[in-house]
Amino acid sequence: MRRTEGRAGDRAGEDEPRGPEDARRRTSEPPQGEGLSPGSKGGHSEPSVPVMSPDSCAARSLLHRASVLTMQTGNLLNWGRLKKKCQLSPSEELWDCIRTTLDEWSLKISPELLQESPSILECSVAQATETINPEEREEMKVSAKLFITGSEFSSIRDAVELACSALGITQLDSVIIAPPPIDDDVNLSLEHLQPYWEELERLVQNKKIAAIGTSDLDKALLEQLYLWAQVKPNSNQVNLASCCVMPPDLTEFAKQFDIQLLTHNDPKELLSESSFQETIKEAVEDSRSNEWTPLWLLRYSVIVKSRGIIKSKGYILQAKRKVPPLVHHPLGYES
Image (cartoon, rainbow, N blue to C red; front, side, top):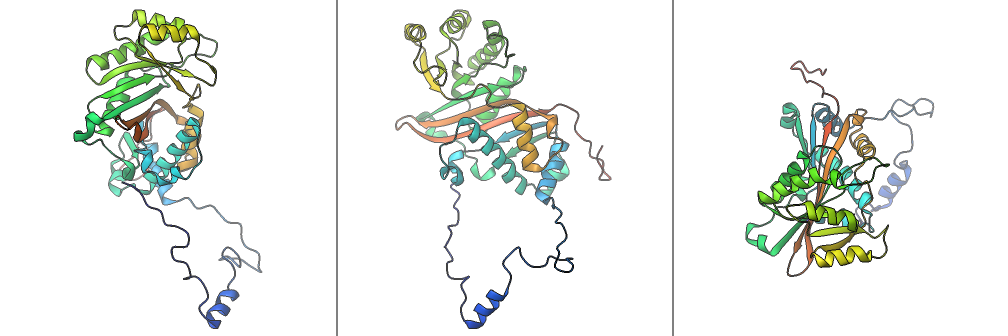
């Protein structure tokens, strides 16, 4: 569903003076934002006090009482506003999407949802939600890249199941996992990858994913994973920002074992805790935003196989509260 936006000038002429009296009346009025404000004395206006919007209050109240937050952008191609923007970096696109999703969701909060105050809060852009027509499923390739920010391996299963549910399908064609989080002074090893890969293998065996791939592995680590894994990686992404030319040894190994080499421009940390907290704080004016930490982020795309064009793309993420949520009491106060 495409959202149409009004254009400047659609009602041109309605605000123009239509006669001498109208012109005199309009020119005698002060421009908007000027003149005396209510309660001003002697031409000196009182300092303005920022007023918090009811939408922000409702969103903040729900967030305070939730322990898990799931966010879905829906199909970004249905967001007319993004088409008007210049090419965005992956980070810029993500944070713009999170802010917009929170803004749009805040405007649609129902009294029933506010009364229910669920512990698992779903935040989405309803008008952008788009599932895949079952009759067209064979014509589409659904790919995803998964960024795990926490140490909970079950996050992989949660992310895949939510993606399938959001798109109305039973299986993702391909999932690439970004390197798991490790300390800056530690080198990524097979030992770090194994628990995440085992979770992906279970999802392949359960037919939730058809093929799995890796990201940013050099030849040595990719070979170690390939020899150890039961379900072999069918692709490996290389960041050309740090490697202008594919390493020859990696290219030779991938060719020998039929591993597709792809490129990407994602930063090392696409979803940081501090940026996520700051975005929530700005969007809903929440001083308790530092209590939230993101668990995972999944970016998906739906491509028409025969034409090679993107039909749908979007983000799904999940975060959890690091401290217990507020308790809503029947009398209306929180603790």
